[in-house]
Length: 212
View (cartoon, rainbow, N blue to C red):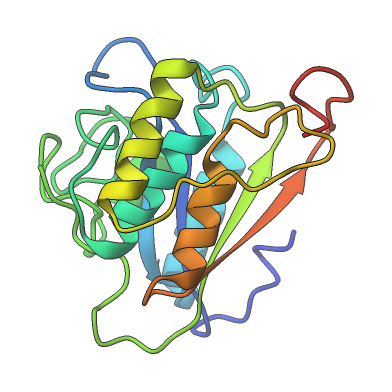
C-alpha cells in the first residue's frame, strides 16, 4: 500500500475519521483523531499499518460524513485548539484509552496522544509552534458530504472565529458549493501552518452533491 511504502522515520502521520454513534460516544458530530500525528519510526509505522488493516466497513462506519466540521476539527488539532467533536469519543486517541481492538490499544498506548483524556477540552497540538515542516491533509472521500444546515453554520462560525473568510469559493459543478470545507482548506493553506489539502474521491457519486 501507499502507507507501507513510506520510508521509516521520514514522515509524521495521523488518522482522522468521521464520528460514530453508539456506546461510549458523546458530544457533537464531525471528526475525531483515531491515531495521533506521530513520527513513523519503524515501530510506529508497524502499529499504524496494523490499525489501518483492521478497519471494518461496518464496525468503523460513521453516522454521516460531516466534512466541513471535520475540516474545522483537523485545524483545531493541528493548532492545539479546543475540540468541536473530537473529544468524548470511544475510539479517539487519548491518554489512558484502553478500549477497542488490539490494534487500537497498541496505538493509544504510545506517547503523543491527541488528547490528554477522553473529555479533554484542548488538543495536544499536532505540530509544534516552532516547526518548519510542511503540513498536509489527504482527504479520502467515498461519498458526498452530509453536512446539514446546522453543521454548515457551525463550521462557518468556527472558520471566521479562527480568522478565516467564509466567502464562498465558486464551484462548477456546484452540488457541494454551500459546504465550507473548501473555504476551510483555503484558510488552512493561508494560515501560519500552511496546510495543503488534497482530496482523493473514491467511487465518485455522479448525482446530487457528488459532482460538486
